[in-house]
Image 1 (cartoon, helix red, strand yellow):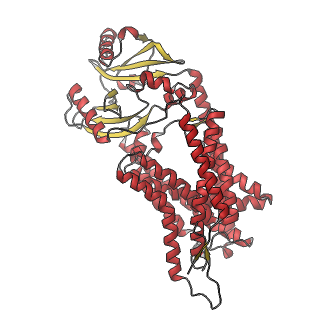
Image 2 (cartoon, rainbow, N blue to C red):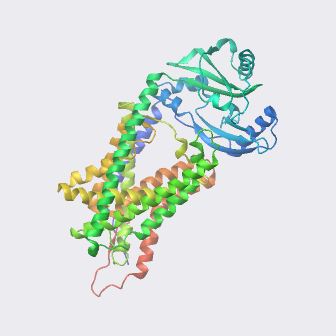
Length: 544
């Protein structure tokens, strides 16, 4: 019978992590100068679709249109408000009528093929903007005088005083292609820093077919964002380049030392990686449609999904060679970082790894919370919601937390199991061998919408160093469980925001899933483990 044993050092680290997390959460709660970023929807996508369908039917006489709903966010506006500390003022002045986050509904008439993009306030189902996205063939244009009259009538109906609005001499390059006439108006009063409210109105040859409220952002801010995004792109390409070199190195080592490599190692984990990742690509169908902006290209969406599946297959191949070569290279150096299923210690190692993983995850989450707070208070770090990575843009949000295992398996195999041994061979130094792959790994995370982007590089590098030393001390299984537990906790908690009891229960299940996996694997392995030799002591099991 397995005898339990507590790991006091990891319990202390976990306690420190919990204390840090709670303390920083309290400090966040005491900060009242900024409104919290992002709120949860109060209406369903079905209600948003009904509101948009009713609006288009009443206004343009289109009966029983087709609809498709995605979640969207005014990311540029949100970023400017946070960077200039104007979020609270915006919420007080404009937030209720023109929210940052909203539902975007594509409304299409199957008979006339007219298409509209309708923006819905996801708190109360009110229409906050719309425009026709159909490319018009007519060359006739509405008179500017009539367009101005119609625009002012609509602004008055939408609660704006036309007398406070100034017509801008601004031309939209896309409207000519669509056969539309576009007028822009601005409200010089009540500015937000250097940003002013603007109204875009679109017209066909007869009537108003688009009304969108936007905010003009200063060119200096847009240039800064562009520079940050370019820096993130460069870091991502550098990370990708080094990762490809590491993959090529793993293939070369696997070929040169093929007689010492076990090519069956990694097949199951690679299969798990591919199954979850490919399924998630299909699950993100709404997210891929949201990337187009107009959300009206079904062909482009499926093309993107197919492309992502091809990329996923290539990543699976890279993962497989990382597992094979990494395991073989460590074994050749006399260190066995990952026991095989047939080994008697596999079950206890999985169980140990699961317990250690949870405790280490709590510590890492505490450290991460400290880094976030230090970044926001000391380095003016801010983040915006990304619709392409939101559970609101997934067919089945409750599937998303399984991606924690994709990240844990692939990233620990590539940047810890393979990366550390490769750089250890080059530099003969543990710290450098841990640091370099941690930086490479962190650079691939800089395109998340967190600014300034260098702070994301620092944060993930710190976490990578922790996971690197976890790998060196406890092995591959513990590093995977620590990573999976950390991501499972965060992703499971993201389901809580959906509000339904089933979502909360699903979130709790995913938080517990690493433990379930560890227990089940240890139990299954125990049923096939050889009997103890007379006089041999049973393995000691660390419960925590």
